[in-house]
Image (cartoon, rainbow, N blue to C red):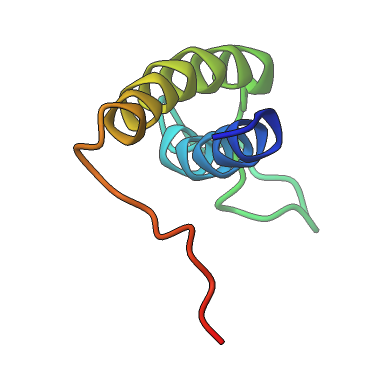
Length: 81
């Protein structure tokens, strides 16, 4: 794999991981204000979630990348026609 495919794979893994991490520790606001969404979290802690996403995505990327390098999983690189 070249560096572009490695980066694209990491970006895809990062975004999927972000959507898995977003619900962690979500607590609704106790006192609702008019006009605010009742499902909005009181403290979203996005920086902590971004850091957790980056770390988890790095581990997942390494596992996927290693599986591709060791040919435990294969991606066709041949073109037909």
